[in-house]
Image (cartoon, rainbow, N blue to C red):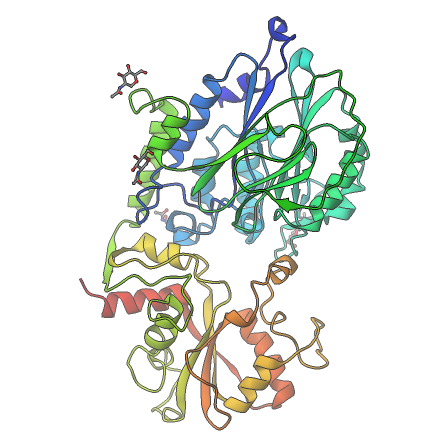
Length: 549
Ligand SMILES: *[C@@H]1O[C@H](CO)[C@@H](O)[C@H](O)[C@H]1NC(C)=O
Ligand SMILES: *[C@@H]1O[C@H](CO)[C@@H](O)[C@H](O)[C@H]1NC(C)=O
Ligand SMILES: *[C@@H]1O[C@H](CO)[C@@H](O)[C@H](O)[C@H]1NC(C)=O
Ligand SMILES: *[C@@H]1O[C@H](CO)[C@@H](O)[C@H](O)[C@H]1NC(C)=O
């Protein structure tokens, strides 16, 4: 961590007359993508390159430039190294703890499992100390939080930069952490302390919050009542979208997308210390096209999204491969490769006959969902899914002729495409990193299925009209608001016919909710059975059996 102290104190007394430029490097929603993108050659940078980039960019800053690096969370759950062996992200955190970030915030995936929370609290956050901005997360049965609410970076005689961390109101799904809601959090004593920090030249909010969320208006409004014209930058995440927004004349939002596809780079000149602008124009959020932001500072408020192509990263700072690799970068890379081998993630498990896309409609032949529904789950080609047959759920084919269609409900969408050619164990994890255990409800009548599908209701435990689709398997409120839990969670490639029967596959929590609804529609008729396998195991078994190279 040799860099971290250098960064903060950028300037000695010799440069106090010039106006400093602040350059921000920003990552978010990395989701374990820290060893390149095997199927996307243009995105070949790994965590070693990320280290090199931040290191060199900081070392090569201009005399009056401050270069800071931030991450807005969801570092884990997305690739093999994060999820293999049930490590719940520990392997990713262990690597990423060496990246010289100046501020980090956690996201919902970072705290989805207690194991991840414990790792964050005990091993990851302590490495960053005051730079870990997890004040909104309270560690279980203690008053300790995952980090500071805010941090002050000193610019010496030039004043201070205030860095604050926020997340959206992540529902408390695990027992080891409780997240304080944004509104309540802003009323806690830390906020007044943060606003009382003297000589603040810029405020950076590191947020695991989507760029268009009203939380940002709330936070922005509260900050503006203390700092009417200080530059405020919101480094956002969570929605996996690359976008830049103008919040007001001195307020700016940048979200760099997902999977370490891009690094957000922003640069602007701090307003002169003496300027006292009072105008607070809370402009409506507006997407900005092109590389510059509208408003007073448009000539100095630059940003770009830099693809994680190593050559482009080197070009960005006027380097080539000659002096690129650092000792720490090399160590990170060696460590990554060693851990990938340890877990067998580079082992080939089969060969895919074509590319199956996770963004194609289920109606398209290239859709990975269609593959799962029509081919993987009913792998034998028979009427009943192989998954049930192999796990002894169906006895003597008793109901076999009845179950004519297989439907499959996905709790969280497939996160990556399955590419044509050799399939490595890691590819399987990237496609289906969540890997929930699958449960089934068999022989659902078409009429009941439609009623289940169309049911509307509340999220109370005793639904009145029958719970809504969003109620089925809501992971947390935000996800539901994001529209992730919608019709497209119900996957079928056939028309539902009232008189026919169907099998549903779902993760446990979704199945339990579906059963509750079905018990209202048709009391006592249906039961939930486990397949004893995760969706990933089911897919892996299929690949190993049917996709021989
Ligand atoms: C990476 O970026 C360089 C420089 O722009 C470009 O020449 C190269 O083609 C890129 N790599 C890939 C695989 O697209
Ligand atoms: C995988 O997990 C098991 C059980 O926790 C552990 O014994 C084993 O050492 C782990 N494997 C690796 C390669 O870390
Ligand atoms: C803390 O909470 C956990 C989980 O609820 C519980 O198992 C443990 O006993 C508690 N520890 C203390 C010291 O209260
Ligand atoms: C790489 O950069 C170094 C230093 O800037 C320079 O001396 C060297 O010639 C460059 N190498 C190539 C292959 O361009």
